[in-house]
Length: 117
View 1 (tube, one colour):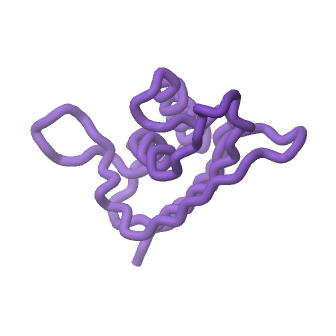
View 2: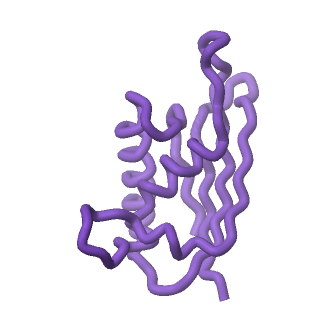
View 3: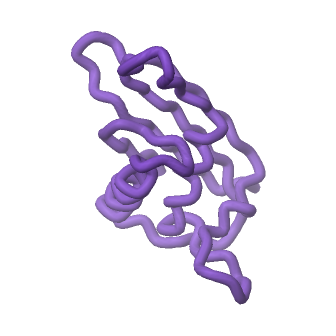
């Protein structure tokens, strides 16, 4: 499965996190993906906008966390007694990258998920 998410990626714990997670969820839902039992291999390629100022930085591990945390539509929910969380503990292989958008290119992310054997 491959999903394209358009929009400004967000790190975890920022004001933009909730809209980013909603964009990821909407893109997964639009692909009519159903949660799957098994283990996963995930590739995530971020296209980040040019920073607005010298304080804006794109921290790859935080970009990944916010994105994986919105992928319950793929992973299902973790079976535990606390608040619902995606079962991203089932990701056994992860490749992530980031790059600044090219001129005329839209920010976002390409997410590819495979069932790991």
